[in-house]
Length: 393
Image (cartoon, rainbow, N blue to C red; front, side):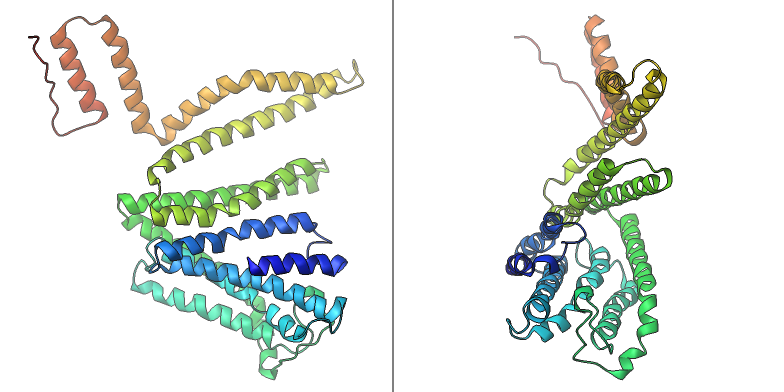
């Protein structure tokens, strides 16, 4: 929180030199900071509640590394460029800002390797942990001691105060580090899959919660990339859709540490099935309605253009169509999701509905009792079931 407050104050003082003033804007950059603040905040909760689990401490380290880097860079820009000499140790802050960001990048595979109990799936994964620790050290050596200007974009005019000739040899290795990092992430995902195969009921629920958050981030990132490609290839203005997906992607990043905290603390784990069900239903419903609305507007505009010059009628008709289709589509998609992903629950519900319908017309007590026992066996599948009827006194 101190680093974030210092970043905001320094960015206002730096003016045009502040981060985000040219790209996303100060408000968007601040939104990114607030989302990433979820890592150290959830890390603090985990470290307090589960101090022996290293994931909470890793989240705290991610927060300190990221926000420390941003604050140090703003400090260095203020001390060296905007108002030279106004703040002490500006060169040291700029030098630290060139490599402290590597720490939080290197911590992310550790979370996948240690989730959820803080232990590795097996001894064979120790080599991946060693590689995860060595890679940031190589990156730090390449960034911190490279001769020439500092690596930060806004400090390109400042020469590195701490250089080593041997670091120049790491320039070629630095180009391969993104590929190495990708391989480490894939190895960490493989460890998560191995853990899933060995997990029992409780641990599977924990993994399902975390994977749900990761899948949400991946789906929104893919959708945002697809919208960008369609915008670039077709020339259709999809700025609004791109902004919506970007905001959704940004917000979903906070689901990663929050999902991890919920899983580790085992808070209402059994609600994850309901959440996944609702996400599948309303995600598919939203995509279908959006496609229907867009296609309806385009087709109706092309059809009505010779008759009407404006597009208000096409928009109105498409809007009414979407409103009319909402409830029928929702019911059909809900049934399809239950049928495909929740088959046992779907079959049990259908059995209960059929039993309720038969019960309205059944008057023979022995038949009702036999039917009830059969329904219980079919839906709950107990090892034994019996019906006790109290005699009237």
